[in-house]
Amino acid sequence: MEGKQTPIILIRADGNETLGMGHLMRCLSIATALEKMNVKCVFLVAQEQAADFVREKGFACEVLATDYRHMESELPLLEELATKYSPKCWLVDSYQMTQEYLSEIRKAAPVYYVDDIGEQIFEADGLINYNIYAAGLEYEVRCPESMRLFLGAGYAPVKSEFVSVPYPVREKVQNVLITMGGSDKLNIAGRLSLCLAECLPKEVNLTVVCGRFNSHLEELMQLQQKDPRIKIWVDVPDMWNRMAQADIAVSAAGSTMYELSAMGVPTVCCYYVENQRRIAEGFASMIGMTNAGDYSKNPDEALSQMIKAVSELTNSRREREKLSSRMKQIVDGMGAERIAQKLCDI
Image 1 (cartoon, one colour):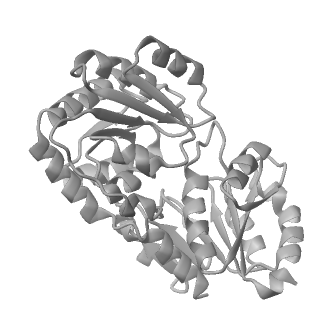
Image 2 (cartoon, one colour; image 1 turned 90 degrees about the horizontal axis):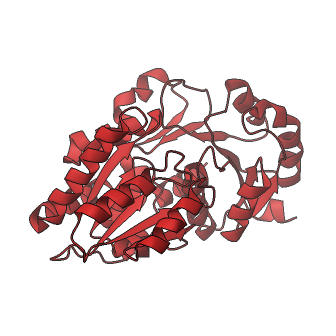
Image 3 (cartoon, helix red, strand yellow; image 1 turned 90 degrees about the vertical axis):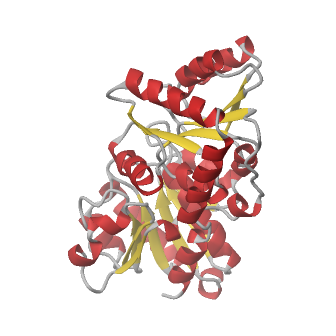
């Protein structure tokens, strides 16, 4: 009876040491907004480790026990779950989806999917690309006229806390936040922490935020033991508080960029996978943020650019204020609510 009384949206996303946590985090923001509108969200994930993360956030979750890289193999399970839940719609956030996959689950309910690459267009009921560069991907020309398009940073699914927590640009820099994604396979945070600890004034502390799937976690913990200025935080539940305490942030160009922008934390970015490149380039071209480049191809150059940009921001409150203001103009923090309202309007 519950499924008939309360609208249900099934959310298909994954997170692990390979994928990182970006897909799950943005879907959790949307789910939080949906539940405030009295819509129940049930997550569908391939692995138990992702399910643990979702349940810790207070959401129902079904574990498919499948290979997330081969999504079509889970279609029989999704058919059973569609019968069990009678969803209002599906929300799919994965780089492994195919047209056949979406077409099959669309038989049970409308399908909306998250895209941030724009290389292949799938026929569905709606598409969400909240990235700063979305307008340049010509979705209106490439998608069927019947598809609903939610495009641009106005749809960035940022939690309300990133807007509601006050953020002052302080006179002196006392804390630099480093966040390179949940997994950070290249250990950018570790290497950058060491370099910044050497070149920044002694009164500046370094806060590294990482995820439980970080394969370099032991190395990071050793850095914390060796240098009291370096603090390591794992799976931070209140990221907005860490950002509020930061005078400068250095971030991989993923979803975290929109959270930093909503709060207005002066940021330096880099990228290490292709889907981050456009975000980094978009922020650089639109608001003049320093894009340190591709760490996976030119690690030493990217590291040098990050250190230089952080040093320059440390020495100029005026530049930090200007960058903070420009970032806030990009993201207003209402994106998750806008997506949730659109899904409720189906």
